[in-house]
Image 1 (spheres, rainbow, N blue to C red):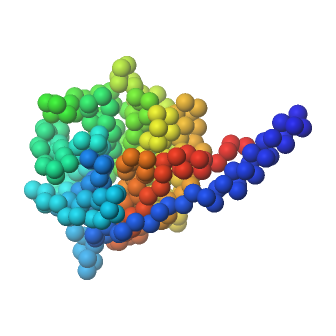
Image 2 (cartoon, one colour):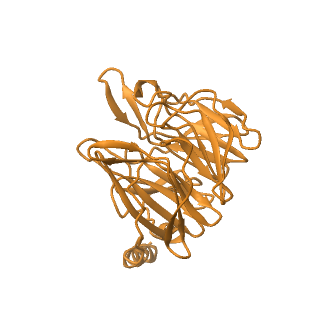
Image 3 (cartoon, rainbow, N blue to C red):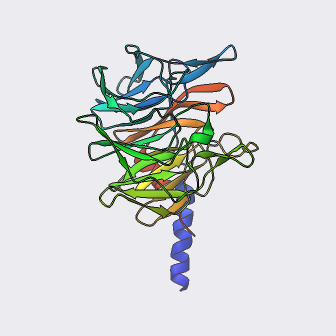
Length: 331
């Protein structure tokens, strides 16, 4: 018993000594502040599409395409979108960045787009109805679109619907909606690990108080059985959390917005799908609703809303293996 205790203590000490080794690397800033953008790794480069920022107390909806080359650490400007776009469900497979729905500053959208390494934008299809603030992830050649609302100005309309968009023919198929919540959810953190779709956190409008409430609950969807089941809830109720898979079993969840008193968060956890538990992890280098993207061995943190009526242009990266190594031991 004593040797086992000593070994456990030595493991903790070794971790504490190592915990200072991993740090986020600061990269050249985004060409302009951005939050609510869509981003992914395409052709080995980071593509950042659309988004929002503020100027002279006015919210600006962006139609821009920005490209970051990890080899040169330089940003380049791509062709503009046909219209401004932000808060769409999105995911990338290395060959294309896929985007579904979103809003243009006036209304929610239905289009499903694909953007390739040559920055050619293709209209793949349309969702059955407009949706904004939905979460997105890729699984088996389909873009899963979960939650969100058809009206960007009405959070009472958030749903728990799930659609799978076939990226070959653009056909959108409804899947079993999530009934484990008594309400819908907007801006959830969505990722795929081990073939399963996972959703964590998010927000909804409480009809009794007319206040936006944060969600801690988490669920996974199995495409083969077309069914949901609950998993361990996130330790911190939040909205606007960003999620990125580190491997087939681990999902890094970071940032977002807590209560009004807490404001924007840098808190991070790693969810272990095989053990169904969350563990505190290395926090973000800034507090906010950032955009996390996996590209090669690195995880990138791109801008985000870091305070009310403000967006960040900060850009950081860290090796995924370092994030896994910095997971704190469960005592």
